[in-house]
Amino acid sequence: MSGEPAAEYRIEDLAHHSGATVRTIRAYQDRGLLPKPERRGRANVYGDTHLARLRQIADLLDRGYTLASIKELLEAWDAGRGLGGVLGLVAEVQGPWTDEEAARITRAELDETFGGKPDEEAIAEAVELGVLERIPGRADEFLVPSPQELSVAAELYAAGVPLLAISGHLRELRGQVEHIASRFLEFTTEHVFARYLGHQPPTDADAAEAASMVRRLRPLAQQTVDAELARAMRLFATRHLQHHLGAEPLERDDEPRSVALPVATIRAVHQLVGPENAEAFITAATERELHARTLDALTTSAGERGEVDQMH
Figure (cartoon, rainbow, N blue to C red):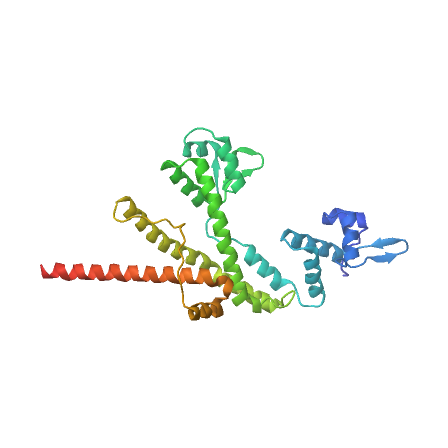
C-alpha cells in the first residue's frame, strides 16, 4: 500500500497553516531562510518542508534569536550539523534558575496582607516590577512569580516599612543584583564557556557539553552571593549595633583618604590586574585583611576569656 501523497500548498495556504503572512514568507525566501518553492507552470508550490522550516524560524524568534543568527543555525542544520544540541543549550539557559514555583493570590488576600485597604499605586508598582503579574480575564487575581519575594515584602510591611519604600529598595537591589549576574556570566564565559562557543553556531557536541556545564554551574552564583551577603551582613550589622550602643563611633564611609604606596607595589598590582582595576583590587585586599585580623582578634579574645574562666 503506497503512502499518502506529500502535502502541497499555495503560498496563501502555507501562510494559513504556519501563522506567517504571505509578505513574511516572501521576505524569508529573499533572505535565504526558506527554500525556493517548486515551480509548476505559473504557480509556486510549497510542501511540508517549507511548513516545518517556518515553524522552526518562529520557534527560534520566540527564543530571542535574530534573523541573521537563525540563518546561520539553519545553514548548519542543512549542512548536517544539526540543531538538537543548540536548542538543548537554549532550553537549559532559558529554563528556571530556581526551584521556587509561582503561585496565585486574590486581590482580597493581597489587600488583607498589606494593611487591609486597597492601594492601586502599590499594585501598579508591583506589576511594573514583576512581583505581581495580571492574569487575563481575572481582574481579582494575580500570578506571583516569586512567593518568597512577596513574603519578604509582607514581613517588611508588617515591621513598619511603607510599601513604596519597599518597592524603591527592590529597584535599587535589582540593579545591583543584575550587575552581579552580568559579571558572573562574563567571568564564566571567559574561563569556561569560551571553549564551547568558539564555533558559530557551536557543534552539537559542544552545545550539549555546554548545556551540561550550565546545569553544574547554575547554583554557584546564588551560593556565592548567599555566602558573601551573610559575611557582609554580619560585618555591617555588628558595626551598626556597636555604633548605636555607643561602643564606638561609626565613621563615614564617604570620606576618602589618600594613602601613599611604594612604586614597586603599584607596579606589581598593575601587572596583576591592570591599571584600570588597581584601585578596586587594593581596596578589596585591604578590606579582606582587616576582616581577617578582626576575626583573629575575636578568636584570641574568646580564647583568653576561656583560659581565665578555667582558672577560677
